[in-house]
Image (cartoon, rainbow, N blue to C red; front, side, top):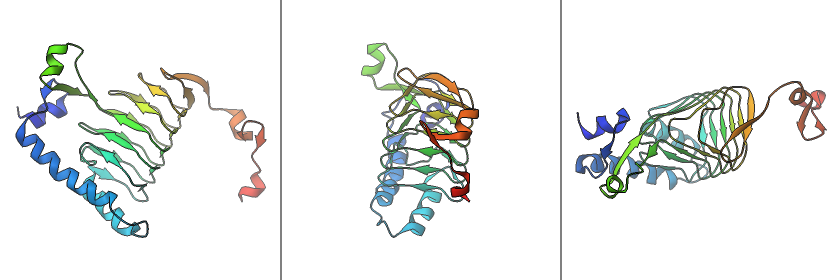
Length: 204
């Protein structure tokens, strides 16, 4: 098994492998070019993301700067995904994001971890676990999503939350560690923020 295969398998591996570093450098060169684009170069950004990401659906937009260990090589975005400034994808293995999900600024999605045993860390060992984020989620500003976590469809993760365990669909979850606060329900069909009502006539 190659080091690259180990990297994607969830096993411990040494990330000091020379061939691995050369491949990663090619990806990072693409990421540099993406972050150097001008705001008016929307079409160019779209085409660049198609070359950088494992999968990216129509209508996705990622506001530079984007930070990613592998420039999105292991990232799978559905349609209509939006990411605000400073999205960080520690994409040493796969990250899956469903259609219409939104990321606030300064969100971190991490697949990589390091063993607790100091002797292994000293030898630059790490492991990677995939992250799954469902359809139509909202990940609030500054949230951190840790390796191996799954987040269900339609869920809202509050700003600044640290998601250490799976979060189900159709809930609002907040905190460090992130916990379910409540289900999304009738209240949210009437109010968009605190006690401010949704004006359906205005939205037409």
